[in-house]
Amino acid sequence: MPDVETIWIIGASDGIGAALAHEYAKRGARLILSARSGDRLQKLASALGPDHIALPLDVEDRASFEAAAAQIAQIGPLDRVVHLAAQYDPGKISDLDPNMAAHIVTTNLTGSFHVAQIAPPLMRAGGQLALCGSVAGYFGLPQGQIYSATKAGVINLAQSLRAELAGRFDVRLISPGFVDTRLTQRNDFRMPAMVTPETAARAILNGLNRRRFEVHFPRRLTLALKLLRILPYWLSLPLTGKLTQ
Image 1 (spheres, rainbow, N blue to C red):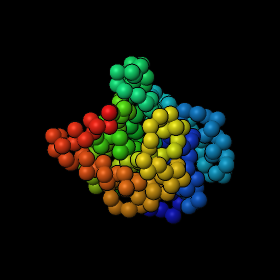
Image 2 (image 1 turned 135 degrees about the vertical axis):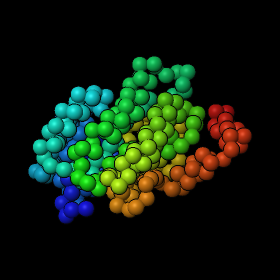
Image 3 (image 1 turned 90 degrees about the vertical axis):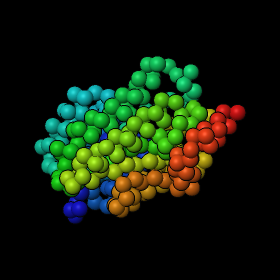
């Protein structure tokens, strides 16, 4: 990596994205910060210093992505792209609003697809592209609903992209557990092994500087769910079924 990295963080206005922006800024990176909220982005960019750019976009809108990409192309090649934008609505599948479900699919899965297509031409050779899945995508759990399904799709997309771009770009997968953000604050159940956005940001930054494909945390939660994923269905499905009782 060069001495001064240029990093595009999508989903940077709050939560993990904002915390990650602070961590990278401390290390001297030049940041391009994107999300739908232009006011929050500008406030964050100003707080971080004069070298950082607020570039609003809507991950559901392909034209918005392409317009942002055209501006970034004038800046120069990117060293990293970290895509964290997501939408969430807790509840059982039978209780979900269909319009909100479609919104979640478009934000989480289609938005990641847009990044997968648009980001690579903006990156230097060997640059890093990180997509954000979730441990919720490891296995279908009660009340995981459409969010979990979209994150399973993002995991699959990152795996495919890793193979397609091998030797050209460094594709990574980020799989957080429960992080204390405005999204998880809507949950009405106990969330084990909760971490702060700052802890999550440090885990992501450190993980992306290592060689492993997936950055997952906290391990006391992620390893248990990885074990659940490899169990045969005759064992795993009765175990998860008990969570509905």
